[in-house]
Length: 219
Image (cartoon, rainbow, N blue to C red; front, top):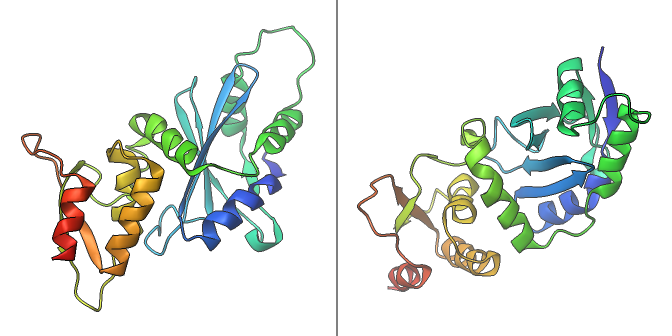
């Protein structure tokens, strides 16, 4: 038997990210002893994880829930259906003490929904994604291009019939220590000049700085 619920408080951060074409949302909610990390990825390349899915990572349970979203996001519908296994994992995440107080799963969902931020600072978004990535990378490897390549070594000029992919640019948020502001500025330069990034998994390589790479783009 499944439980259905509408996380309608997602509308504000989702709409802002959509309008600003920043297809990555990540934030953490703390309810009681439970830590719930909400994530949504949406871009033309996010075919398997598209904004049609809400991912919820449960820190204590070390489990990632994939919840299909139903309804019109434009109208504030973020409806999900949770099966018995998912419900149990979310309850266990709270680390409740048996026999103490009355518990309502619907109340937990309401509390999570009401805790969703209506504004999400970009740096907080980036920090959350970096913290959680080591725990979810295997299950979310489709959200980035060549997830095993984490060292930034260059830029590549694309032909006129191609554009840089969000799945490649998104790696800047995860695999560099740069601020959200610097990353956004760098992505703007890349898109304006139709360049993408070159990454490697060779640990002997030294990562390039944004300044070094921008010079190469300007040449």
